[in-house]
Image 1 (cartoon, one colour):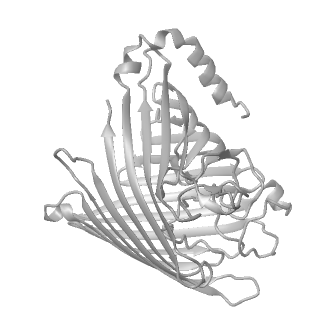
Image 2 (cartoon, one colour):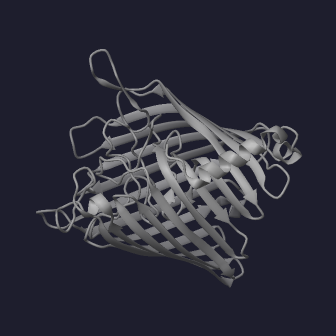
Image 3 (cartoon, one colour):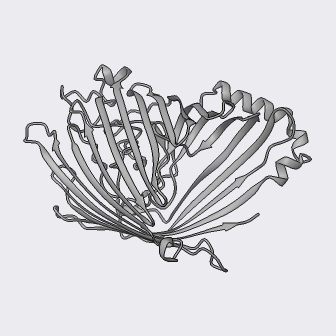
Length: 435
């Protein structure tokens, strides 16, 4: 892996302080360890094709260890993550476990898979630098955790909070391991079969105005795309127990390098205006949520321009890697579909209820309906799709079973582009603090 300046800085400083780490009170006393357990059942039933439904069941173990920082002007620390997924039942290949090949050459789900790694970290005042395994949650890059094991990235990131009200972030990602894989790979977009090892990003969140957050981020996946993001989040109190929240997002995404020149292996999938796989997209959305008591009512609208699909990192097309699975920072990124096709116009409605309002904390209900149309399809009339989602979750709040969680996620998709499906996920999770 190509060394970056951040990697060399973390490495050299860590070596210089290695002898003092064991005696550094902050390094040990501020450390923590947690074991997350997830029992996960997945069922995806294809409704419009002659194809067996996917049924998979597994158990995940995710160990997170975080150190404190050594004392002094420059604090040094190290974090570690280890993840293991074990197959309990999976008749064939699917969407949760990596593929193996049996003695007859047939694809089958692996019995187990694992990955992990270390993250070195430095801290000066309110600025922190990390290099190693990362799980970013940014508008231009979000780690996906919708299956058995989380998606992990490898690279460096610097985050600064030295200016009051302003969080600045910059970094470079070099590799990624998918949620159903043990192998770190390079990066791509949906449809891309060539790997890029450079994803640069920078941006910030400004919260210096009460109840308002302004966001700007820039990202560049070398040889695929350049992306600018503008966001606005606002919370307006209306009366005691009532609030109106606004969420506005705009993405401008254009081609870069090999994708711009139409080079084979770097083309995005789906409709493109020139039929050449070039990325050219503007996507904007607005969602407004009215909250009163335990109720939250949301209405949203999103437009995707018709130059190409909206894209962010997606390794699902890399041959033989099992690296699929991504999270798009869109209000329409849901259980089964993302409503990010070229030309698509989507209206969504959502209702959320927090049962803490009636004395049952930890119990939540989420209902959503999305309808998209005007989807561009090469050589055919515009297409449409809709999705209905239901999520019911409960986390025990106290007693010996505190933090034990249950969730049922149910989705129905009817799409003239992505196909029809009925979808269910059942999750039992438990977070166990070790120290």
